[in-house]
Image 1 (cartoon, rainbow, N blue to C red):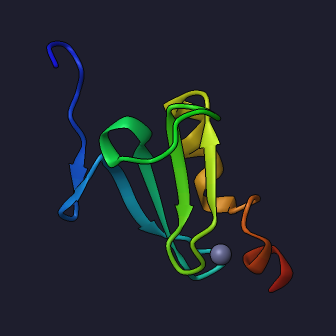
Image 2 (cartoon, helix red, strand yellow):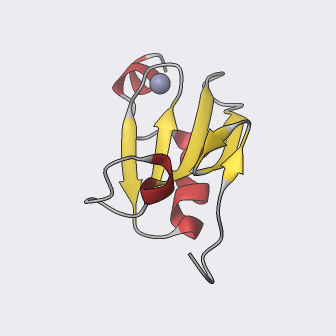
Length: 81
Ligand SMILES: [Zn+2]
């Protein structure tokens, strides 16, 4: 696809970033939904709690990168606090 950045990180298609949350000590992945084969109905950018499998869609890359470390969408992480 011309003009569209292709994301691949840590050998994962569509992966923008894979990092460890300093807050919850779990791995958080940020993906572009269409390139990663994920459901993009809720937003083209997806953050995943890699440890618990919780998935959240976001509208923009800026938002997903801001939200990723906080894991607001993962009930297991939120419950551990
Ligand atoms: Zn979690």
